Image (cartoon, rainbow, N blue to C red):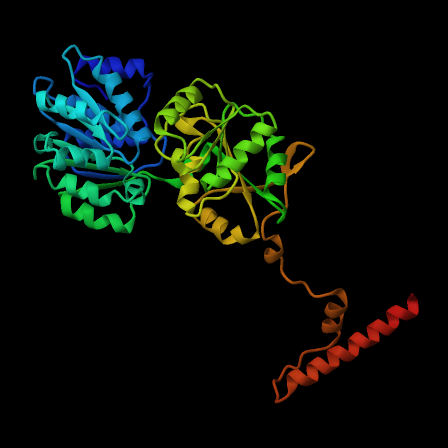
Length: 431
């Protein structure tokens, strides 16, 4: 696909876009046509550039009002989108004003600047955008031509749906709205019906495809202390970069301290780490200053780190869809990746769900600092309950009656029992 603006063609070269991803091939033409879209696409599918490229193609660089509003659920994701957007904007000969609005920034300075001029592209978190649009009335969203809600299901998870709803209510009716998400929860459907006009629904989130470049290894804890099994797993891998996911800030801190004690090159990212420090750590992660990152699900979505070779689930996430988000951190853009998960007996139903959506699970064990094939999960359940050799012989020696008469089962079972006793007597005589 070719764009009419030279700086977009330059961007494609600098981004090394030899081929568009499947998401980009489907989304870009529809955005250029002005269609409302709801796109289900997995993490790492190139969806950010799928909407950024056509947005710049349609952008009027001479119009100094707000033309595009992009809403992201976290500061990290907003920062990432801003970086991508600024990279493209800086290639334009005509200046393009791109600004980011998130928490922990100088609010008074932002307000003062907005009173002087408006950004052409505004990117931010729901709460901050709503504050500037509704409370301060200084970000003039009513001139927007395109509104993008990125990671919509995560926005719902974070409890921002009401904020996004209020932002959308300030936008013009003829606006183009684009919603991107890994999944589309039922709870978000009323919002979509309220604001989107005959949207095109694209389900490009094929989990089976997601599975192709990622190996999914599951290791049973054997109901022993999880940290012992985890230390065994660490001896089997030498990752380029690994993220170790935990479900809580407490467990992530415990795992981090354990790995520091074991002298691993490791850092920690969770909700207790201040935003400014998280930003610095993510920059250092990009620079490969660490080999391991212990994290909560704050890193499972939106953060684009191409060099991740391994994902380790110290704990399986409570919602099985978050397993997909976590594993999607590796195997990105066609590269191979490995996800290793500790599981216990109570997780059987959970893993059944993963397998039911096309994830091919391989069961492993640790032997001598190596991952080897382990026992197949629930293999006992899959075996047919074969009768003992004595039972089988006794059943063969008793002919089932051809005609069914009252009490035949009782008589039949007595005959079988009689033959079993005879067989046991013969056995003991020989031994």
